[in-house]
Image (cartoon, rainbow, N blue to C red; front, side, top):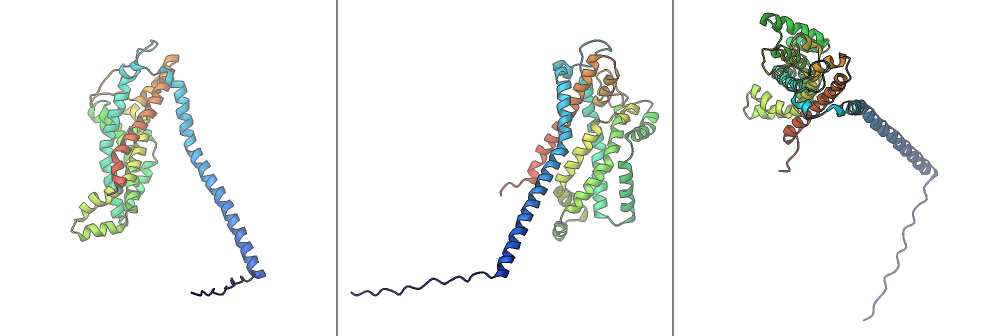
Length: 310
């Protein structure tokens, strides 16, 4: 059988680019090159900014680790402070007292702050919301010693003396404005479609705000709560008027109670090397305590924000 070869089709000839096309391509290449350079510079600046933002905390923690780690021992966490001038002792009462004060402050600041923030987000244009928002900003800028004087007038004088409740109330009042503003901003980020979907399914407005909107914004609210706890955990001025400190181990809510920040302040003023070393060790423990609280909160809430793959 005879086969016939198909004729060879010549490849199409590509036209040579004109001078205008070459100029456009050159300008485009130069523009892309400049953009890549600018992008690299900006990315480098953001990385440097992130390092600078975290550097102070790392330096502070490292310095406290160098100065205070040598004073940490088992008795530091299990014993109360030794008498002035004597060796030994620890800050067990201050550690427990700080946890109690944080618990009291959180029981006061969390419900009030989250409720107020939710109201500000849902009723943002009302005169009451505008007034509360302005007063929250003013309250957030007040010196902490003013909170201590306020708690002294409200709790200490009527009850006849300093107590853990008075100290927790003062710290809780400091948490309220920060949690309020954080809750408002996080709730406002929640898409309005979620509210509309819940309302369309027959949910009442209050239940929609609590079970849908608030849970969706909980990740950002937890961050604000951690910032508020970190702020109050190191406050000393309000406690000078309220909890008053205690050299002995006490968990009574109606009695003076020790706190790490107050003990650090007392120890740092003493002219003894061991007292100053214990002040550094207490500062290290205080930072570690805040870090542990942050990690626990992140671990507990991570299931709400990380997809399970279902």
